[in-house]
Length: 609
Ligand SMILES: *[C@@H]1O[C@H](CO)[C@@H](O)[C@H](O)[C@H]1NC(C)=O
Ligand SMILES: *[C@@H]1O[C@H](CO)[C@@H](O)[C@H](O)[C@H]1NC(C)=O
Ligand SMILES: *[C@@H]1O[C@H](CO)[C@@H](O)[C@H](O)[C@H]1NC(C)=O
Ligand SMILES: *[C@@H]1O[C@H](CO)[C@@H](O)[C@H](O)[C@H]1NC(C)=O
Ligand SMILES: [Ca+2]
Image (cartoon, rainbow, N blue to C red; front, side, top):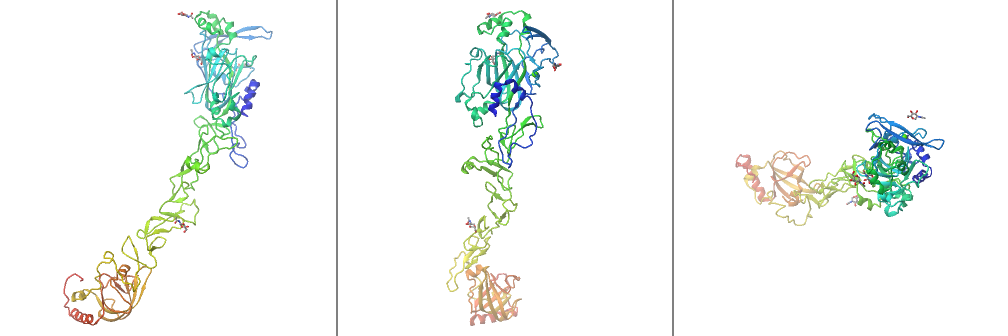
């Protein structure tokens, strides 16, 4: 399409200029950036005359220094060439032949023409600078003159709004002398960005129009979409035309010469002032055929709210030229659309847990060019490049979809029973210390009992008939089973009972529950009553055998009236308990101590022992 139009311009330049003289802002009925099934496809804005209505700045315009006469020759219907003269208006704010006439609506029956200031300075550069307002991809520049074609001119383009300029095209009867360029050089792969110099007058001999196609005879033109070099070559925001010499016949007519050797002399020569009004450039239309550059991601260009021309970007792209991906659409690298692939930008997959992401080229390569997005700041306790995992200390709730705000639940690992605060991502199982069990590591495993240690909170229960050798560190000296009993120890306790241990059970919590029969009461306390009662021993005391309690034996049990423990109702073996195996000797002592106690002969002092 691009290429065919370029060729059409060469064969039928005038027709092409009419055809593309309007800038279309019409919204297409069907968005051409998507096919019928909604898939992204390459789309391009219409081919237009990009210059139409755009501002042109002339270095020099007739009348800008005051009213001045100018004359043109015109061939009459009788074939006789006659000279017609008129005056440029002096009004500075309303020139009669302004540069805006170059890009107005072109009516060939009544052409509006820009005219430069008539002058005898020779040769004289006059420049025209056209601003397109944004990047376009150009196919040709065409110029229609109101008098004769100039002999020499140079075209420059800028792709950065006039900051830098590069030669685009030269045109001269004397390319080498004027521009130091060999005429009509062959363009090959290695010099595809070279500006050619066209020997003038080999083009359109009759017309007063010249057109320069920019892709013609450039080898990559047939594969334009795959050629960044040529895409760059035809990209412009501004075009500048610099006229350097009049047409040879015009020069000749006025006694000037284009012969380079004569130029300096001519410049010095004092041509009579009555020739001045015949020496100027005049042009009726400056047309630029091309498309608004949107890199295949927009079907039209629009004006934004700041009056800036910009692509109406689709395919999740953005920017004046759709030259980058929209925020959060960084799963694939930006690329120009081709006929083969629209290369639409793709949103990152963050499962609704992140608002930002970045592109990672390594991950993209590893995925086989499929996905390179990495989510930034995953919320809702999620983690991973797609926020598809739970962060440490949390695990996946299988009943909720991955996008749910509460998909990650806290592990809640027990601070003592677990190693670290992380748990299995799927099951929620915390990592337990040896001997510890439970999903959050809050229980001792079977065969283990609770200890006071935080490093080994559960320790193995020794089999009943196995002698216990607790270490000095974990089992301090046991004061609950003294060798001897004295009056003071007896007096400090609230109760003194003769008990017969008839059963024992170790609970999951590690506690031991003994079934005892209270056979006689030497001191009553609150709980002292005859009959069967539970007696409790906490896990650490049990493991340290402090005191050692054997089923089937009888004991003297002394203790304090501690507050009721709801979970362990009955008698509680604790640090204040005393337990001695029952025998005759103990029985004698206890009877004596209890008589003295009742008689109010207890010694005073705070020490229990
Ligand atoms: C040509 O245009 C000028 C100004 O635009 C107008 O005054 C004039 O009448 C037009 N002449 C013809 C023949 O259309
Ligand atoms: C005139 O234009 C030509 C081509 O753009 C340039 O090489 C030359 O230096 C210019 N001369 C003057 C006097 O500006
Ligand atoms: C042009 O005129 C100047 C002074 O008027 C003179 O110095 C110079 O040599 C002249 N150049 C030529 C090529 O005649
Ligand atoms: C987590 O638990 C699941 C199921 O219980 C198990 O298949 C998986 O191996 C566990 N993962 C780790 C890292 O232990
Ligand atoms: Ca015009």
